[in-house]
Amino acid sequence: QVQLVESGGGLVQAGGSLRLSCAASGRTFSSYPMGWFRQAPGLEREFVAQISASGVITNYAESVKGRFTISRDNARNTVSLQMNSLKPEDTAVYYCAAKTGFGSNRMESSYGYWGQGTQVTVSS
Image (cartoon, rainbow, N blue to C red; front, side):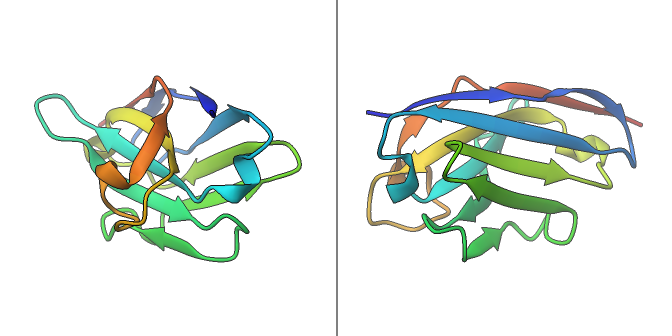
């Protein structure tokens, strides 16, 4: 069992930066690949970024590549998402999730543990 708690969301102007953090409980955190997803109002939840259990391999949605960076600290049971050059279209609730299945890194159904989400609002 893994419990996830996100923090770091807020209101920022376009072009600004935010750093989201996700704190995990449980001794098995380091065995899970982790992902960030987001959901904007009226839209389905979408993949943002993913990091392997070791932290060596990362993947990003095309819409955030070059602007967002995912990282993890297995000693502290945390995963972070550094978001730079934010755009109004990045406005969403951001969720961290632990990958428990064998499916695609980019699919919600591959993730079995989810946080409650943190709101990110980017003003123009």
